[in-house]
Length: 355
Image (cartoon, rainbow, N blue to C red; front, side, top):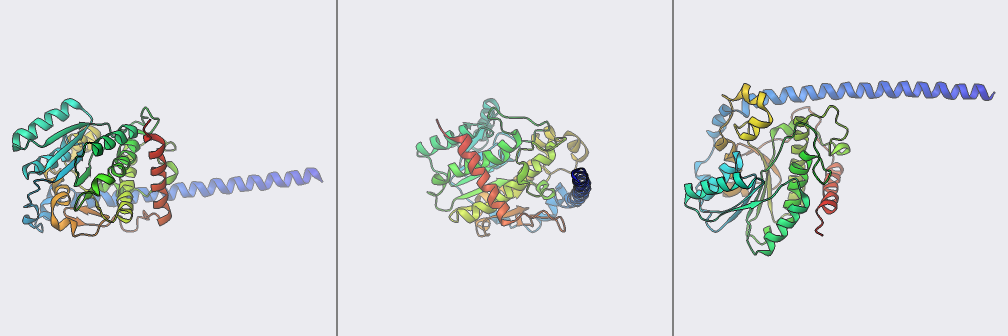
């Protein structure tokens, strides 16, 4: 009798095991099909909208006077300001009289960019700050020192980012892409809230990417420990999806600050050439100039038209656009979005506490 009972239990276990294998195999196939669908639709969309021609088409509806703004007396902080879109934005703001705080990782390239901008504009209020955006503790200390210095801040532009192709950990044991693109931006933004709230019309902008459209928020693997094989492009896209959600949540939590995020399109920048060499080689004649890529970022940072838009939106070519592809099933729930922010807050406390 005991043998028969034991045999029955074994058979039930085997049937259950086979069911689970079939279930997860089907889920895996469905997930792969959806991934292919998203990537295909996104690439077709990109060829039409994200290229240089896409910018030229969109720019026909721009209002030129939107950027005719004197920002003398206003202070802007731009991470990753020594090259590409960040540098173009810093240069444009400097030309309009703004004070620019360039937050860069590399001292040589940062100082070269600062000198170039100062000489090109005659604006002496261009300051370089050295900071690695993958190090939460250093970011928290920088923000504290900035506040203690008494400097004002009107606009924070989270532009710095990375796309590390091989999974790499920081000295803190954090995955490098996540630490830089997501957690670093969150620590800097939340650590500078008290400074921003002193401004008359403060703004926070995150430079995200249209690549986030191929990703749905994945709370189960924020640091890609389960991603095998590791795909740096998809890790980057997941980070950019997280940034879009962060922008929405900031808008809800901090109503006195105008929050937005934007996609610069496919621009010919050093970051693209280094991180995606094959993509750059195939698309280089169709890529936007860095200035074209920076246009919407500048518009969000200085124009009156931008701040009249609701807070929390995602912009492309000076227009708020959908955060999801059609039929892509990439929307997360309210609870999932809140869980992301809770996880970021917890990691911020864990890794950025000043000793």
